[in-house]
Amino acid sequence: MTSSDDYKALESKYYMQVVNRMPPVLVRGEGTRVFDNDDKSYLDFTAGWAVLNIGHNHPAVTEAIRDQAGKILQMSNLFYTTPQLPLAEIIVENSDVDRVFFCNSGAEANEGACKVARKWGKTKLDGAYEIITTFDSFHGRTQAMMAATGQPAYQEKWTPLMPGFVNVPYNDVQAIKDAYVEGRTCAVMIEPVQGEGGVNIPSENYLKDVMDFCHEKNILFMLDEVQTGMGRIGTLFGYQQFPGVEPDVMTLAKALGSGAPLGAFTTKEFCSVLEPGDHGSTFGGNALTTAAGAAAAKVIVDENIPELANETGAYFQGKLNSLAEKYEFITEVRGMGLLIALQMNVDIAGAAVTAALPEGLLINAVRPNMIRFMPPLNVTRDEIDEAVAILDKVLGEVS
Ligand SMILES: *Cc1c(COP(=O)(O)O)cnc(C)c1O
Image (cartoon, rainbow, N blue to C red; front, top):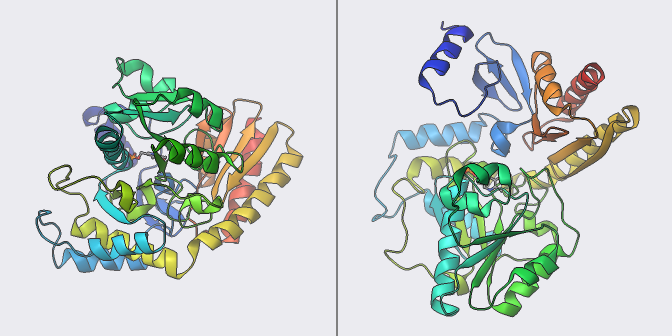
């Protein structure tokens, strides 16, 4: 068997050094647990970056991939692809959008959404092209999505940024009204709850007010649900937590493929402006990835996994609030469903993440003073208790 040290040597010799890796070499997963190449087990409260909403290697997903691999993996999009169509049906029948286009990632989904917005502007709004997005957002790593992502750390090295985006404060509808320019603005794109920006939950009316303003100006109201979609924050789609809100355009990825690389952008019929020749993707929505996606979506809907996320999330937040009573450096626990952040007034998140590893817990330092939790939505209460006990020990050590 190849040892961890051998893998580390291979990585440092051959792989692009764009991330500082964590020590374990993880080779297997099951439910909320992953195992390294010495068979040590870890509770995975990162879920492959909010991807494994029904856990690692859910039997329904594994079976669907096995079955599809024995049939057909890929055809050109000139032909009908199944199980792409049943998955599109699940998304449309359980949301307020009407049409789906499948692609391979969140960034690509948002690129597609922005093409819809640009075409909307070109054909209906005298060539309007600018899209308003927010600070602390995250929309992906392509050239255009770095301009959309309102975080200097993702933008500074890559200037000049792609034109056509303007970033304004989140949770501030007036900032969007002020940034709007008739004949120039074609859409607003925001996350229902900001994930990578630190689990920022907007005030109750924000999304509805932004939507109403968009409709008043005939510009598109676009929701990036790449992280919040597929049950993460307690409803199948995050916007369903906010009464009266319906996106014109919605994007998905992360949990959509349950580990298979699958994204989607979706539209209401009135703004479904793309025509034959306007867009495509060689792999987008191929038989393999949509087999995984359809199997996962069926489990999420049939077993009401979003409601489970709500209940378990409340339980988890309760446990974290007990820690907040014990450690006065914890300033806030906030979240929706199972997208939860623990904020502190000291920069020990990185140290806590590192110290949690040998104890068998994977968590994310989303900011130097903030830990983010995004376990599988079917995580058990026993697993939450185990994770909180480790966290308690680790916070005691590093503070
Ligand atoms: C992760 C994420 C993306 C980017 O997705 P990729 O698949 O990494 O391109 C976009 N938007 C949000 C909200 C995300 O969380």
